[in-house]
Image (cartoon, rainbow, N blue to C red; front, top):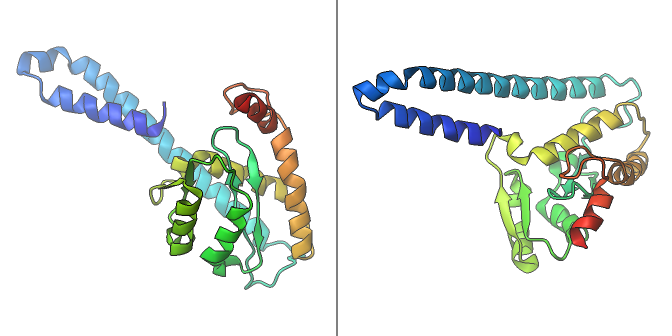
Length: 218
């Protein structure tokens, strides 16, 4: 059960229990206690998942910082935009930006124009300034899609993209590059490899994103 669904059901159960008359309250007490325990376990699991993701992210950054052959100056960042389909899990592209943390909304929009499919209906993103700026809003109007920004500090709302980022980071750990062109070459290697390998998260487990996409669009 998803976190949001579990939370909604618990709130509903609590409201119903609190509204009961005394006799009904006593009769439902045991069932309510069990529901409360289930909710606490679900809540604890969510906290543990969040802590694990934070630890994994910190570990990745630590490993990256400690690389003795770091190809980029310490003050330089390289940004990579993840463009992935929530239905098929296909990665449409991983544009690389030399400007790093200073990447502009115009750069992001230019990259998206060449990657987003014509039949696109929704775009889910975080609430970064690039996705709230005027150029992106204009793109949404021109391409006729609905922008769905996720809640702040709720990465699980966009879990498919978050999982992809983790997979990509783990893949990069064993790789090395000397310059921007080397990193772009690795990105170009990873994308088709990811799209062609079996994916257990799909509704038909065992198919690759590319194979699943062919079935969906037939």
